[in-house]
Image (cartoon, rainbow, N blue to C red; front, side):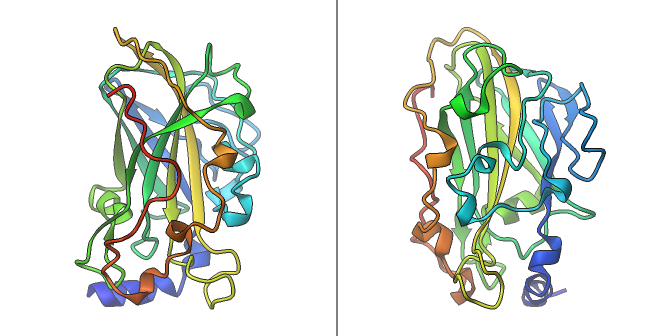
Length: 261
């Protein structure tokens, strides 16, 4: 099917398909299941570092949620029962999925990763006390393939829904929360348009990690996730349907932290 036809198909169904979650997590050579938002929400499995949520189906958040608790680790987020071990400087890989299919082509947008120290065990930390730094971001890539251009989410789709996050190489040992997020912009361009009444779609997910190694750098300068976005930034209100060239796109949120590179 031609890319333009794919866009037309996807844009006809943005609300029905907008339910995303991290389905798999790979760390230190081991695969962990993600939190299944389509499963039994009353029984939390002990073998996943993914944070529990009450977000049945993995539905999105919106700009109106940007300063509310659910933006931290998804709706009803609460601590995982374990932290996945990973060496400083190594990669963590996650695979995104929707209710019954891979991430859809029409949900273009940036992918962001944040990190916060638990200052102890992540299973005991108060979510509201976490202070996040951004460790990676990827937004608009180029003006090829689709009418809206080629985005980080399109790179993810091309990699079977997987995304790799590098743990800062000089990060001090300890337990951390990785806050990984997709922001879908297919309905972001207007608050009164034909696609959505509430703009951009946020898909935050949290994963607990136990960083090992000889690093000495502590996370500093982090912020409460409820202050990461105002909700009306240009990077959240862009009309991506105006054409493929979005070379001036600025990924929302704070600048990338380089303290432990």
